[in-house]
Image 1 (cartoon, rainbow, N blue to C red):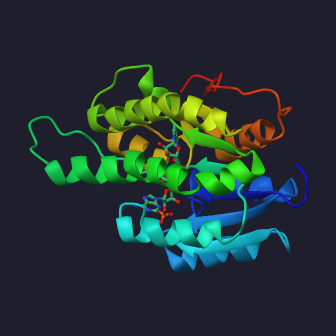
Image 2: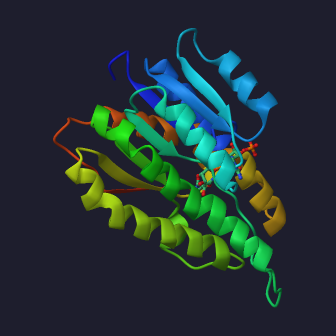
Image 3: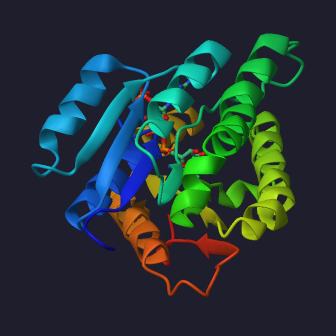
Length: 237
Ligand SMILES: NC(=O)c1ccc[n+]([C@@H]2O[C@H](COP(=O)([O-])OP(=O)(O)OC[C@H]3O[C@@H](n4cnc5c(N)ncnc54)[C@H](OP(=O)(O)O)[C@@H]3O)[C@@H](O)[C@H]2O)c1
């Protein structure tokens, strides 16, 4: 990547987003960090190489007010070369539980936020002939217990990505859906605990490996778009 490129990373305080922010910064990109916890965002920013922080913002992506403010802050940068949607929430689908709040929350954070952020940043992305990476999930391919709600949000994101593609392409913006399988992050540690399984991060992909794939996507030749990329660990767990 050229040195003056700007990448916006949501969920930059943990897991895949944190690793992505670090990897992009190490590759010479200036990174704009988005997180919901001011202390964590500041700590991540302090840990990045000097001169590689394009800015930071604290936003609850489930809040429309926060999203509007965030979009204005990022547009002030002038251009966005890369937007990586890593933030997301997870909830277990409990059989027989009537829980509209959880439903609304997951759709607001996992689906509405990346959609509105992409739309809101379109001008900046178009100016840079930029790229958008939606970090989706291998959950779209399989079945599983307790995953119905999360899986529904990821299918919705897949639909959004495919549906936005032509509109974005017309403005010179490339779009990729990245589908990691199980990756060693704080979220995955919680999921293993919940499933009653022993957590062995070494059997999973590391967040740093997934981040390296994002860096590779960001360095593709300009005339190439990878639409969908599925990643998995070759180790059994
Ligand atoms: N780990 C996996 O195996 C895996 C596999 C496939 C896909 N994915 C996808 O990869 C993405 C990252 O997952 P991860 O495992 O790295 O999760 P993680 O460690 O839980 O990190 C999630 C990030 O999103 C942020 N976030 C959550 N809710 C937010 C909100 N309402 N507003 C703003 N930020 C919010 C978190 O902030 P805090 O730090 O404040 O909590 C954190 O930075 C997710 O979209 C997930 O679906 C993960």
